[in-house]
Image (tube, rainbow, N blue to C red; front, side, top):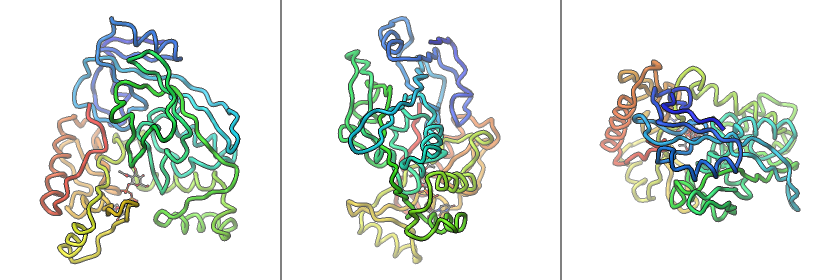
Length: 345
Ligand code: EPU
């Protein structure tokens, strides 16, 4: 394990905030995690981080940042599916690449999402019609309170849109050490999102038809990476934490009134519970924020749901002020209060 005091976190958060932690500990296995959790000399509180791709440091962190280097992928026997057990510190997209290379279906639509496998199971990452919770068999955790291991079944994880037990009641108590994913060799393409299906057919005409059953996970992975590269800032060049806000859900009556008030069709999707999801990107775009800059902070010109560290020197305060201005203008114009998807630390 490595312990660094007064650690520079600027290369460890995708927003590129220039902040420090009183202490940073990287551990390689559960035994090391246990000894860390019992070590009263380490500054508290603990903050467990994956790739740092879904948070905004608003200031220096006075406790200890923990980071897992538990990195393995192994097949475990399962009666119905192919089950891969994956260490929490494995880079999520490396896992996606490995599955696609082996012809395994499951995470292909989630290709290229920054971050690590442990955090993916906490955030319930999602994109292009899929959420990681659909693949999770169970999640292995270390309990910082009881100093024991506990395995959470998928139901116990209480997954919802970008949400889980680990972000609520279990927050700060459980550290994910490994995730067991269920994958399949049988073609199961999910192509309903936007123009994904048409785009794949254009890129791989020989494999289209038969409801896309001749596509391979690798083809879908490549197409998804192409779509993301066109819309989202390249993490190596522009700092961001992906979608800054969640897509809000409103009641059917509220939505009808909104539609009337706008006098034009409002893009929307019906949720299984009858509520209506309105794209936050559309709300922000309609308020004229796309591509705008406020100091070092900016709104990405191709996807206004993404706030960026536009000049590489944005301060946490500048990002927070931009967040507040966007929230205020969407609330004033549409009566919808945007909720943050990115966690403030
Ligand atoms: N839109 C606009 N203007 C734009 C862009 C989009 O009005 O400039 C509207 C359009 O109506 C479009 C809709 O927003 O149809 C949805 O846009 P998009 O397909 O880009 O998806 P999103 O709902 O904005 C969500 C996720 C993304 C994920 C994409 C694709 C959330 C908070 N975000 O964005 O996830 O990649 O779907 O599945 O649910 C992330 O979580 O960091 C992330 C990038």
